[in-house]
Amino acid sequence: MLKNLLIGDNAFIGVSHLSQIHARQKLQQLRLDTVVDVIAEAVACGATGYTFSVHPNNIQILKALEKTGKLKGLGIWPVLPYTAGYVRTVNEKGMTGLIRDVLSGLSFTGKAKALLSSGVSAVTLDAVRMLNTFVDMQLVSILSLRGVRIPTVLLHEVITDLGISLQTRQLFDSYMHHIQDKYEAMPGFVTRNFVRFVRYFRNSGLPLKDTVIMAPFNNVGFQMNPTKEACESCLSELTEGNVIAMSPLAGGYLGLDDATEYLRTLPKLAGIVVGVSSTEHAKQTFAKLKVWEAELSQAKGETT
Image 1: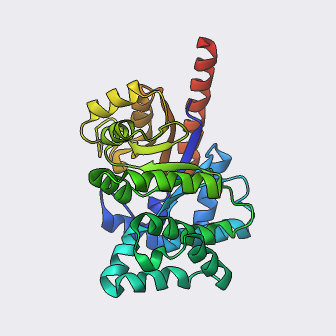
Image 2: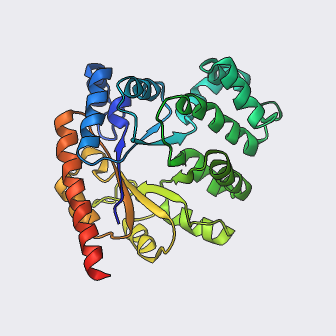
């Protein structure tokens, strides 16, 4: 059942897979209060959560939602760590500079919690413990907000897919236990190769049950690796895990009607994430998705 209707953040941080210049121009015109209104409209029309990279813009958006009382009840699905910013900082300032910058945005108590919770990983450069340290650092500012609810914490695709390539089973196992035990949330993973992810977890004995997998699914096979057909076949055979379809509009290439008609053929999806850039866009998108979700629920009830 399509129980998770998530708002994506690309429009709010100036990201577009079709025209980056156009996306940046739109971002310059988008005010913080407008973003809050867009998210509020999406929620009013059926959106259940907001998924986002921990970009500075998104932290400001969450604070604005808290201030206006519109954060309460909204599921927050952070994608960690903020790899794009980390890579730039490491190139410019080194690992020590990265740690200093990440900590700079936290209160004294927050810094202490973030560092002490994962021991001396930042000093020893233990990759597994360092990942948990950075997760803690970035979640501190989110968890400090009143009324925040985090059902899932997603590992960024760069870390997920690199970890699979390097077969770092310990990294995945440690991350999953860390999210479950410390935050009582469901561990999630963003991947650009759905088939390889599922195959690796099965072969490594890692549990897919109570795990979220966010991967591309769309009618033209955009970002669906290794192939559209392979992803569809893998999904149809999947008996565990909660799969969230991202890039359903293929970066803006497809319209919502075309996207939903295709996604209707994938009954095992547990959710979908769609970016919206205006209140009207939010209303049209999530009202349609809510109707689709209701139809799926009804159909499931009729067949049980």
